[in-house]
Image (cartoon, rainbow, N blue to C red; front, side, top):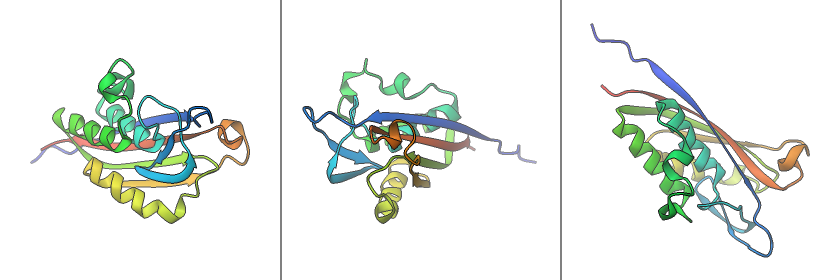
Length: 164
């Protein structure tokens, strides 16, 4: 009789403030470029959805976090796309002997309006992770830094299991 597959879950969170007007950046969110939108500050592209997804994978596998693998002490990741980081996180997790069941991400922010591009984002992130990624969005009803329009946060969960 084969040993049962025991899944492991992880949680990831990422928060980025909007970039200042004197240092503008493009907005990358959910692996997509949002033309004409104020971008987010960060070491890489500032994509909290992709970053939270990668962090959840590391958490589930028990191998550190986003800072451990892609921190500011790693200058080669300065300006890196969230999609690149998610793909690399998935590769690292698989190298550690895990397969990825799925990743779910919810971001909190007043803008941009995400619904019209949800499927496009999920397709890009799913391709990067090599596993299903779902993304949902909500506002915080005017409360906190996201409600005041100062930035965006994202919370993700991931399910992994030991490979064969």
